[in-house]
Amino acid sequence: MRVLVVHCHPDPASFVAAMRDRAVRGLDRAGHEVRVCDLYADGFDPTMTAEERRTHKEPGVAPDLQRYADDLGWAEALVLVYPTWWSGFPAMLKGWVDRVWVAGVAWELPDGASRIRPRLTNIRRIVAITSHGSSKLVNALEGETGKRTMTRSLRLMCSWRTRTTWCAAYGIDTRDAAEREEYLDRVESTTARLR
Amino acid sequence: MNALVVVAHPCTDSFTHALADAAEEGLVGAGHAVDRIDLYAAGFAAAMTRAERLAYHTDRPIVDEQVDDHARLLLAAEILVFVYPTWWSQMPAILKGWFERVMVPGVGFVFDAHGKVRPGLGHVRRLIGISTYGSPWWYVKATNDNGRRVITRALRMSCGWRARPRWYGLYAMDTATADDRQAFLERIEQRMAGV
Image 1: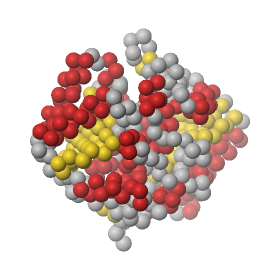
Image 2: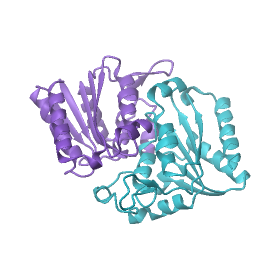
Image 3: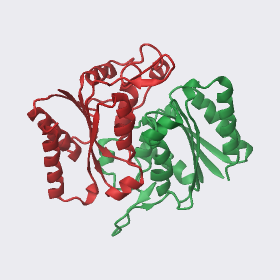
Image 4: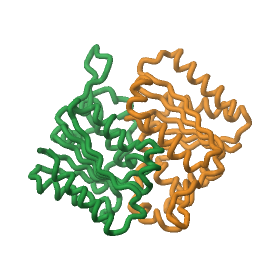
């Protein structure tokens, strides 16, 4: 399977980077073809411009973002690796959605249609691998906004058969080294099972 | 009371900016002192930097002058108003980044001796969100209305239970008539005058 891994963390030495490495190792073990997109390393600009906003109903991304759109069209599975901040995607990852999941890439509005139609029907699986500083209870009270963005908003632009997997570590700030290692093992086995 | 209005939209002629004006007029009319942060006009950088991430758990998590200015305004505000268009069921990346970079430990919240998060914005008495949605109300609910949850749940936890959240949404914006928009503007000014 063709798998696009989108990695989002400002520090290349972070625990999230270790999560990404183990996710990729699991995918390699399973024999998948992997592309890694590292938003911070790319210097991706997450802020939608006025020009993009004015033309947001016309198909296509800004010219410098074409390769991100191509990656989405190429992928059969999408693996998001990021830290949960304020209960959801970091601004960098949210900006990737704002600017790349645009008309002509993620959705289309055909002439005369009243509702948008999904275009990323090539994506059969979405996996979120994320660390939370706070507990599972606190995140449940906050409404798990990152999880819902993945299982609802993004998934609705894929196929109705697209399945999602949530692989999260809660309370990471208070976990010891052994518990973190256990989570990394879980990350690797989750992506190694991807079919 | 001191009010802080935070607005996020790339186009200065947007309906979002008209809403921010209406909100400000209402608040000023009611005798409040209003500060406004227009994130796009201020050229606010959405993505938390590596330096900021590394400083996050230190005594000085703010390393940027502009972020420091915004944190000072936030710490002086008793009324917090957010005005933005909902994209992908969430706030635009630039506003999400404002949460991540400005509401750091010591501002938005504090860690107690056990590493648990405690509210840092106990002085905030009113928490108000004003948003426009392209989707109809039922679709917004089905996708979890994540931006609203970040403000009325995650941020509310940082404000302590005295803060009352209020939410004003204009749904199905794309098919709203000029009258609908005008009525919403008037409603916002009226409600803000009643704060």
